[in-house]
Each structure stands twice: as C-alpha cells, then as structure tokens.
Image (cartoon, rainbow, N blue to C red; front, side):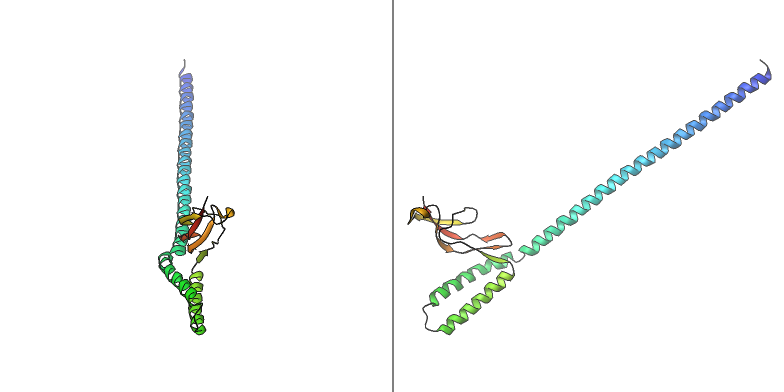
Length: 180
C-alpha cells in the first residue's frame, strides 16, 4: 500500500469515526430529550394529581362547612323542644279557660316561637293515629291491645312530637303501637 492509500484509509476511518461520534451525540441528544420529555410527563402527572386532590379537598371542606352551618343550631334547637312541648300542654289546659285574651296571648307567643324555630330549619315530624309504625322514624314507648283489627302494628297515640333539623332527626316521636 502506498502512502496515498494509507492516508485515504486513515481519512475514511477518521470520517467514519466522526460520523459515529455525530451519531452517538445525536443519540445522546435524543436520549436527553427523551429523558426530559419523560420527566416533564411525570411532573405534569404529579401536578394533575395534586390539582385534582386539591379540588376534592375544596369540595369536601365546602360540603363540611355547609353541613356545619345547617346543624350549628342543633344543640340550641334540641334544648328548645321541651319548651315547645310545654306550650302545647299549656294551650291544651287553657282551652277551657275563661280569659280568652290570655289564651290568645299564649297562642301568639307559641306561634312566634314555632315560626322562629321553623325559619332556623326545625320541622315537626308528622305522625297521626293509624300511620304505619316505622322503627327508624318512631320510638315505641309501649304496646297496647289494638282497639280495632286495622290498627294492629300501627300507631294508636302520639305521646310526644318528633322534630327534625335539615333531614336529621333531633327527636323521634314517641308513640303507642297496637299489638299484633
């Protein structure tokens, strides 16, 4: 081999080495880009998960706050229930009173108290004689023999009214049930 051939071979080898280095560099650049893209995708996924978790937290705390506002008066309203019962008993006893103005005054105060509590979300649980007994709603305080066949297993008398606050039962109505 001549020097010229050797030089050409060396030049070709150098050219091949340069091409291989360029390919290696290109591959490294691609792998760096791929790695950066992969890291970016991971971070984006983390961000989206964190954002979703925060949104869920906001919804949950908003719901809890709303529930708290709805039931914040629960204790106070629960303490007022015996006062309502006392008004009912007083009005029943005053029906035969001679002083109609006194009866009217007590009725006005009773109605004002009831309307105020109703505006705060207190509702009376409607129960009447002949309604079907439901253990989840009613509290049976006793059973007596049913006066008629159709009242067996049904409510015969309401001893104490029940109340609820925003669909939550504060006090179950106390009832007498006919034996089956």
